[in-house]
Length: 226
Image (cartoon, rainbow, N blue to C red; front, side, top):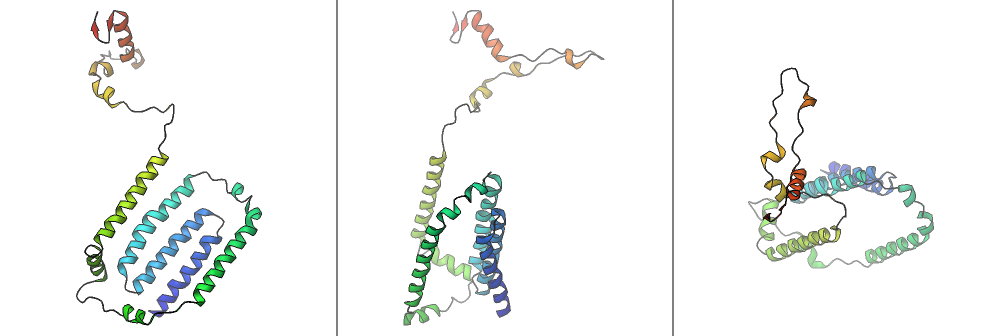
């Protein structure tokens, strides 16, 4: 157990460092997927198989793969993005130093509450697995908060669709009503070809637009006979 922990932890730390330091963004996403798998292994060692499953299914199967497809499909000029790196490097170093200082201050002033040990040592319900116990708590005691979180995600998804939806001039759209209203004679022609005749000698298919133009020229408007 301890050997497996050190293997998963070391690979997790190494892959996390490679996510940040890799020059190729595709390699960064692949190292991120490796980090997710090793984090799921650590969750399994701690007995949290539900969190491990969620980490693999949601983050690896959806989020990381989405990142990978976006990075591979977008034509991003990374040379242009790196042009301003040295220009903003001092500002980034100052902000990073401030964050590190805050982490040191928080870690130095951290005090563990005496009752935290008793809460952490709470016995697991007997006869049920970790996923079942979590499901009972989630869908009974915290069901309203769970539904509220789902509504927030739904609103965020609708907002993203509305913000990205825009009219594009010149786009050819499908006209379902016109497709359903067309007749067989407008799109199909039965042709008898003599044996040995060339296929190119067959008459062309009828043109619905030409038929409508001839109909209008003959004095028949769109509302019927005049």
